[in-house]
Length: 568
Image (cartoon, rainbow, N blue to C red):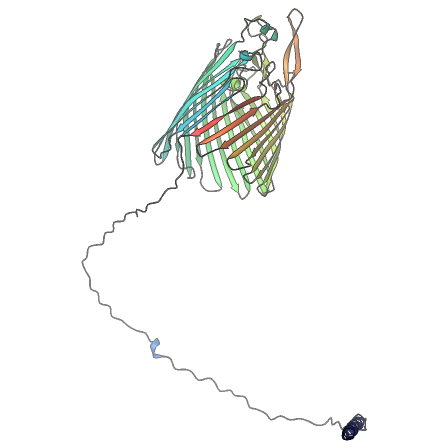
């Protein structure tokens, strides 16, 4: 009962409290009438505060800023001047330890009975006198036609010596070359005779040089002069002696301007079956170059005098311009141009190096390049890709060609030898392009394409000259110490002059013989076992094609050679 009474009392008090709160809330929220008085004529006044016009007081000057006067007394002393003796500091600089080996030897052997020997030796000690020797030999006991009847061999030996002073270098050298070729391009019916032997031709040359040049190549002036002598002969009646003098001086007044002057004089005395003459060639080539940012400009002259005997020749002296310009807008794009002319000096030695099956010729002539006009573009991307494309037109006099000589001597036919013919007025149009790629040190690619068109006057065709060429050189380094090369060469559009004989073997006329496209694949591999020893392997004409560069002269098939090399 007590609990019930307490509960009733608590509920009553709680209810009374809520009721009173509600009544008070209702009384405060009511809206009643109110009266507001607004007086517009009332003015608020603020007392006036006077301004202060008193100036700041001037601070007194410190006494430490007054002028001071000093009395200096001189006390002269009769002392001897101090003499200083300077000596350079003797600090030992340790040179890097490099493995320098003065000698190199490379030996190998391959099919077609082909031994290979290459040896070089050069002094590595730093001294006033330095010298180097080299020896090389490679022969092929068997060839593409009748085995030993078409063999060949090549041997070289030479040396160089130099004396160094503080300002200049005196140098000299001697080289001896001997190359043996076989005239196996005869009528195949000759090999049916067991006693027939294809004639050989041994080409021998000795070259001696001596000269002087400055050592400082970046100073305001540099120079080089050389005196040379060459003696050449073959197994028949060809002899040629040559004396040459050449000198070059370069001037660099500043980084933007550069000038140079080149002088060359050559006299040759060729002798052959049908001629013996003295040929003189003298040239002066002044040139000035200017550079402004990425713009390059060079202007010069080619003054040439030569005494070749040509019908209707007006003068031995000729002057040609030599103008070149280029501008690189950016690394990715630039252009270049050239307008020039010159006289290309030709000798029997230079001709036989181009075609080793050259026989007697009626006359040796230089090639006159009246002008050459060329324009092109070039650039590179991220130092990985580079390209170059150009178009040029050249005008020549006495452009040389090789044709089979069917009448070497009166009434004697020999199609295995070649002779020289010339076109008096020729125009050559050329389009060329290059593309290269380099990926670190792992892979390098270089390609070039050339297209030619010939406009001739006296010759029917551009004998043994290509209308297109393509070259691709690849180099791989798959692992450290291994170098692999793969080179592909194409040459097409070759045409030869072939004699048309009747059934009795009598000459009737000439006909054009189209030669097949030359395709040559070369593979090379070198592996460095140690710093001193390495092994190598080479393969030529992997496609096993005849590759007839000269009419009646196919080349060897697949040729493989391997060997070792060492440094000592």
